[in-house]
Length: 73
Image (cartoon, rainbow, N blue to C red; front, top):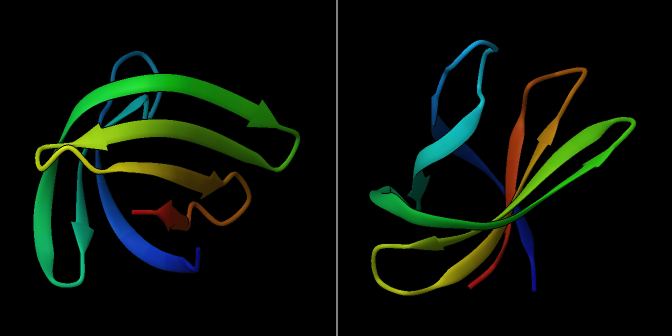
């Protein structure tokens, strides 16, 4: 599985980028239909998601830079 930088659109509740709602993969925008699990490390946040075509990905946001990467598919 390779890791790529992607654009993620998030729901922002009481804090910025609370939960991913959509992700742009290879020029296409996909709706996140389920956040199946969340994780956190000192330098990153992780979301295990399923997108609208049924594919599962791990989205990772670097806390310092705000950059999102995707792994899986």
